[in-house]
Image (cartoon, rainbow, N blue to C red):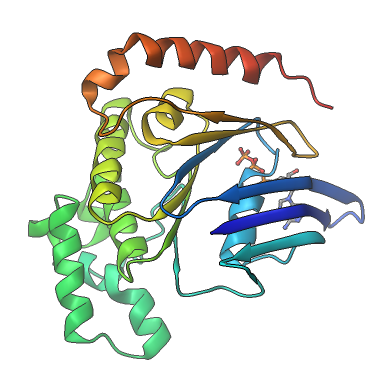
Length: 254
Ligand SMILES: Nc1ncnc2c1ncn2[C@@H]1O[C@H](COP(=O)(O)OP(=O)(O)OP(=O)(O)O)[C@@H](O)[C@H]1O
């Protein structure tokens, strides 16, 4: 469904130097697959997402979706960032429908109904009229995820969406995301620094090497689905987490 072929991305920095963020990335994502991307800071994880989203054009190779090269932002994609980026002057409901308003100049009844349904899904049915500052960090992040899901995208890109949350909320959000993904399957690319989070969520984990970012390894996650709290205590889970930790930490820049 999403394919990277020989993808490279070199930025020209403000001081005139060239920064190669990605080099020779080859990757194919299947429809409805949940893939996490982990790797050291600055190895190009966010760049990878921005390329799929059409926010960047690769300087080498091609990124395609359903066989069509990505040349601009597309409707079938939802993007959730590290911070919720909600508009403080809008209430929760209007924040969720804002992209529709921005795109079409209005919000129709179907969008509003779907926004209410999504609020229910993320456990915030009673908060539609509240402003972002009246919500906790975890609640704000749920609103941002609901916003990314409003147009029911085929592809959901998530850039460390839970990293600003406390550990308990983070686990809770992971299970919530799994539930949403189970109900309305989509192809998810999830950037994280957390090995347990990547393991709990993913079908495959892409391990990237330090700059210039390349794919060092792709690891299949053989844990059965649906995954539960008990999955975290499964000996296979612990063993896999240790194996991946060793791979990530012993990997030297090439
Ligand atoms: N617009 C840009 N202009 C210049 N350099 C950039 C730009 N965007 C990213 N970079 C550089 O590309 C490299 C990869 O950045 P990217 O944000 O993709 O890394 P990352 O793996 O997501 O990092 P982190 O884990 O710290 O969020 C970094 O060295 C960064 O400085």
